[in-house]
Length: 255
Image (tube, rainbow, N blue to C red):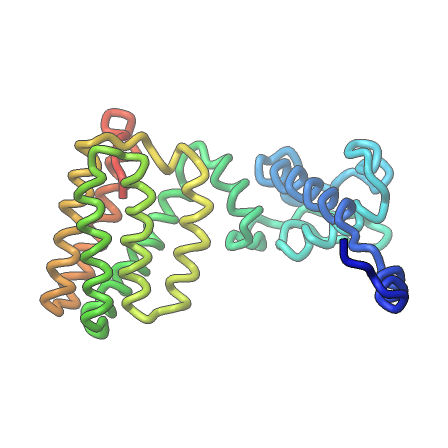
């Protein structure tokens, strides 16, 4: 075993301990309160329970509760005012790009309103990026996209593998566009959406084959340098795949 010198030991002893446990506790409180706010248990305009009540509910210190409330403020969920408590903000103020807020929103989106909006955002942004990719992608980019498509042809019989590679296909097209901001926005919202069964559906072999035929049309338009055609093909694929997943009679599509 290596020996530690006196200087090294002294330096280690002087380091402040990393507050791992309080941080984890605060995050757990934030997730729980975010879920209750988004679910409507604490509607906009209502006041959260007092610090002592929250301490008792979650079994944590006032410091932890204060950290959690600051985090909720940063997410746009509440307004904390000295002497008047912590008030739940209007929904328009919530930061839906925050992963915790977005995940809770999707979990409680029983009417699929937000998921419909997500698909609209994906369709608009990814179709734009497909058009950009058709214009600026180099041969290496197109080869990378084609390789993912070929892999998906082989995976149509294994839907669980296919849906993971499906994400890689869309990422490859977005990467080829050079649009880093658009790619970031789609990645944030899509990553959280994929955590809910309401969005994923239950893809089977037929659904995977249908989705990949749509992918192939996108690749054909990219290879032809047809920006408008690539945009149309991408928008059609995203919207049609969602319609296949959205309705119980055909809730079995990838995309």
